[in-house]
Image 1: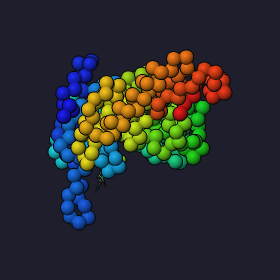
Image 2: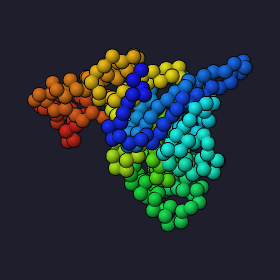
Image 3: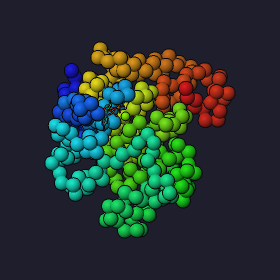
Length: 303
Ligand SMILES: Nc1ncnc2c1ncn2[C@@H]1O[C@H](COP(=O)(O)OP(=O)(O)O)[C@@H](O)[C@H]1O
Ligand SMILES: [Mg+2]
């Protein structure tokens, strides 16, 4: 397996290191079910890292191990050089400020405004002045392009807008890492593309490390720099998404390779054609003469 031999080009130590983490759950019949099996993984600062696998593979459990929402039965969870499994409750609460999280179903407070939702993690932490909180809330809403919705309630927002509020809330305490559990699975494809663009912008602008759990290969192809593939709680393989084709160990790995190769081929074959920027899925290639009709005034079209 190639998993442990990966040396990051930056030569930096990982921001997240999982060392032989293990998690099992008791089943109603009294048996134990191994959701994550002796899994080791490094994630480097600034990366966009995808965790992919079928439903039930252990992706969400693995993500929740990173911020110790699930405590491992064995192994170590090291974030920023500190082993979270050894910390007191108070220390853990502090370090969780550096681990923002978003979910498929957004998990916003329904009877609070956008402003109060985003302010929430700053208020419960209690170390910020009112003026600081207000300024930070505006800053985060600006990052996700939602300043004008500051006084709205979640019910007045679209799914994509709700997820942006959730991102702003997660970013408010200036985390090093943003953990995303199926963040686009409740969104249509157009909204998914926009949200992935927002995540990419945030990664570039503020350097936050993104770990994203998804079952959508197109999300990995469009967003991630590196991907790890889980099956039955085990990490089977991991690789750089843009790496040359290789003998992948899993069907999912081969499918990701195929998506990347298709994008590269489309770009290469474009010739006199215009190639739209790849966002989610492979880019659409169409003759320049078709552009005004296909792409409108933007000159860009997507699959
Ligand atoms: N709290 C729990 N109690 C019992 N079983 C659980 C619990 N959480 C997850 N599981 C089981 O662990 C396996 C992995 O779950 P999960 O991490 O949610 O998978 P994924 O996110 O890849 O779909 C599933 O079979 C699930 O039913
Ligand atoms: Mg899940």
